[in-house]
Image 1 (cartoon, helix red, strand yellow):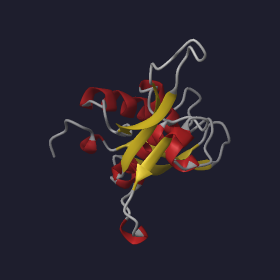
Image 2 (spheres, one colour):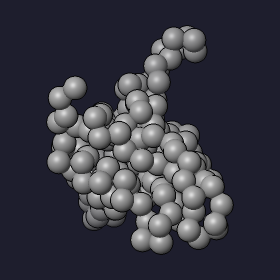
Image 3 (cartoon, one colour):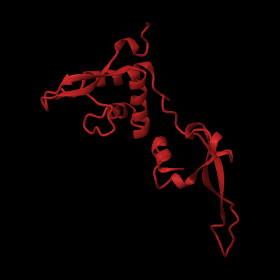
Image 4 (tube, one colour):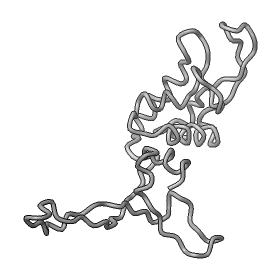
Length: 165
């Protein structure tokens, strides 16, 4: 598992060596990481201990592993609470941002506040999807902190989950 895949699936860098994926040998038809067949190496005790070697042997085997789904567990109600927080902006009047370099204004952190089990990358992917689908709109606003025009995120209420268009 690559560093990028580990980040996307919320697997620690120390544990990523335990995960392997099975792909076709033909590189140009390899499925994306999320749709590949994944396996996790696990240790199995053989219970063959004796007086000389009381713990016995362990062997490595694999079990199928399913990467966490990015959208799993996100109900309409939860999504709307996340969108409400993003649309409200920050307490100092700043708007959240989808920019990769955003730190304090990073919108993905709002997602993670509501669904803490999602990895940073999954939260970033959720924000990117909402921007792509225009659920979140980038609009220019006047920053009360920097006193300059900046780009920030607003919610298109007509594209919220549960809205009939």
